[in-house]
Length: 149
Image 1 (cartoon, helix red, strand yellow):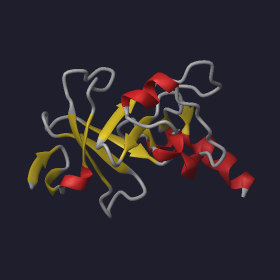
Image 2: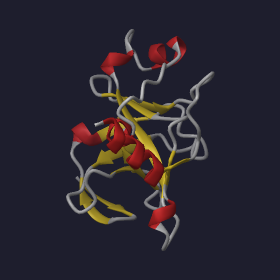
Image 3: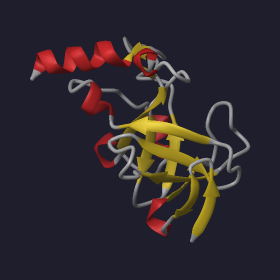
Image 4: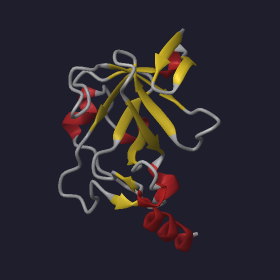
């Protein structure tokens, strides 16, 4: 299927489409999203609404930024996704990139997007009792990651 998105016309396959039954905070009315990784932005991907072409969130695998990222997903959220173990989930974190100031980009480690590929369900969870924050400066996290390797 070809969808019109904020990135232009994009071919999206069924395996890239996920249902967010509760929406995403700030976009609770939107339920159907595609997760894509265009070559020109890789490793940054995009969580694109298939119901509102103006909504698209840049996301990245948090392990690329923070190799020791180890969130604990509440059991009630695991149940909503139809899994008993968080090892069955894919994690992505939303980036905020201020226009014209990529050096000020931040990553939200506190509220990851989690995807269950088998059930085609996704959600954004807010981690409680966590040292992760909504805004970690991406450049600092990348420097930290380099020092760990």
